[in-house]
Length: 314
Image (tube, rainbow, N blue to C red; front, top):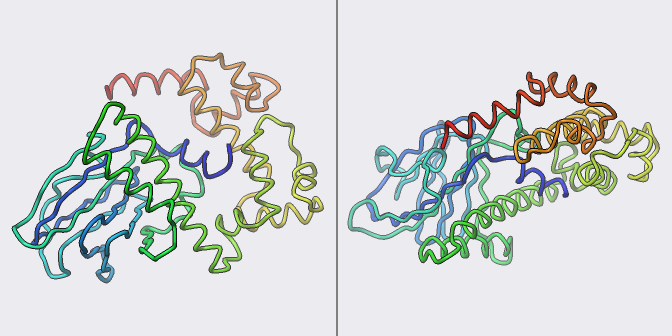
């Protein structure tokens, strides 16, 4: 898998949620902060205002997408001066995969789609940690056509659920998340950022190295072999990778191997020894020590704890 695909696969726990809301003016709602979550809002019809905490109100129009990667609170309203009432839906915390509702008065209609994910802080990719609190992707003719298409498909499934809708909606929410990240990093690279993940993904050499790490974490990579894969000298590669990604190549490789191992432990019943081999450790003992340093638990105990948490949640 490539880097962004892995980020989406790694980021959430449990099922996502989504709610299509038909707002009738006057209306204003607060969406509380929820650490350990991520949410986004899309305007399907009409217009409204985003009310960020401590910031100026921001007008939103049809096609606009707003992403909150760190679960920050915010408000939505038909106008900046409308009081914000308690939320009717919380895309961070609601349990329904998809729902529709009508709220507000009897004035002009605005339709939004709000969605959310639960995140596990121990498995969040550094890409998400580097994102700003709010990402606004305004509608622009000809820009992000895949993102617009995914929003329309998702809204259609929620409006008219049919057999298989659970799978379709879950998959579309993952696709939507991927398109949001793509669009943001495209904008950041166009702004000629000289460091950070946008620059790392846009850099041909570092992009090749990251892709190699993600596609083959068990390979016996060295700084020299990764540099050769990137087409750079060992020293030049190490400097550029560290500058853009924020940590040295082998530190990132170790983090990704252990994150991959944690996902395998959560999602399968393969032995700890096999997990160690899959992520490039020569012995179960070495893997166990590295995993415990990262997650605070031995691999077997981590698996049992995750299973117990899943049973409790269900």
